[in-house]
Length: 116
Image 1 (cartoon, rainbow, N blue to C red):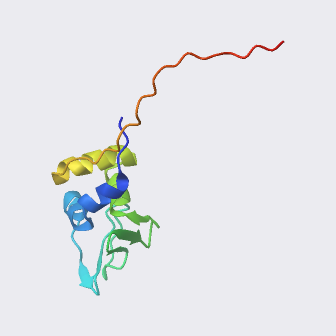
Image 2 (tube, rainbow, N blue to C red):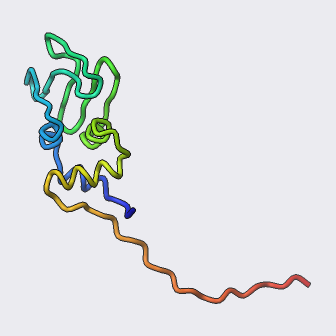
């Protein structure tokens, strides 16, 4: 599988898109922080203080899961980061930002040193 530019994935697909893809709705929106039930451990709270989303990061106060929106998507779908990044881009309708493959090195004959 070709390597993916994870930094570009995080720029192309934002946290709001990821939350929409996983079907998460906040219970509270205060001071640029979204709060609600954890989509990973499924814990619920009346005051919605279990799971927080700020910017492009998340944190669950019960299961202690935290990370970027790419980490959230990967954990939610239960796939390794590379597979999750490719799937997430596809579902968000953006092209996967693959890293360029290294240039092939020409085959050169090896000269062996002989020990005398």
